[in-house]
Length: 153
Image 1 (tube, rainbow, N blue to C red):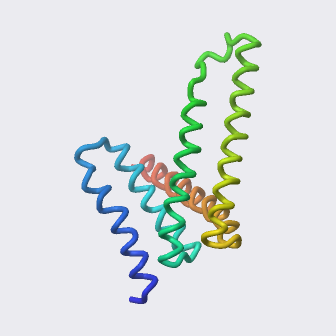
Image 2 (tube, rainbow, N blue to C red):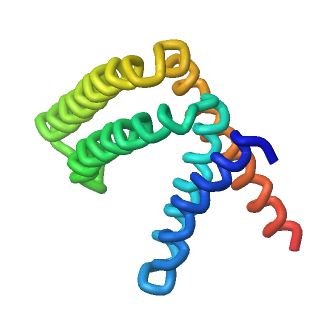
Image 3 (cartoon, rainbow, N blue to C red):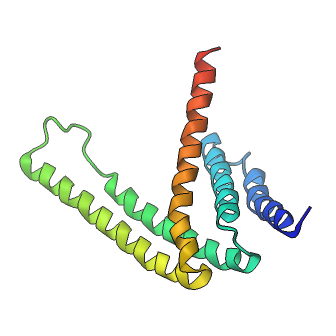
């Protein structure tokens, strides 16, 4: 095993072990989300070829950015379920709220991507966006495959 492989395995164990220990206390959905998060950490760390020093500075910033965006997204979830009976004023307010969220999320990303560029370099930050999309596509593909397997049973 080379140094990088040991680093990746260690990083995954450090992230995944505490998450697995808490599974009995939390719901299955929470455990699944934590497992996905540990897979994402491994995937991004490997694809960006982060050194140990870069990983220790990258992940706290990345996680902070993600938490802030998620916090803003939760505020957006306060929307009505019945769109057919929505008034013009309510619909317009909802549209504006959605744009405010997207603008704020973009501002957060811009600020954090600049911070990340200082820590890991701009080329890796550019690759980060590509890598995040690759992870999402891989995840969707796997979910579709599992769904197809369930239907074939």
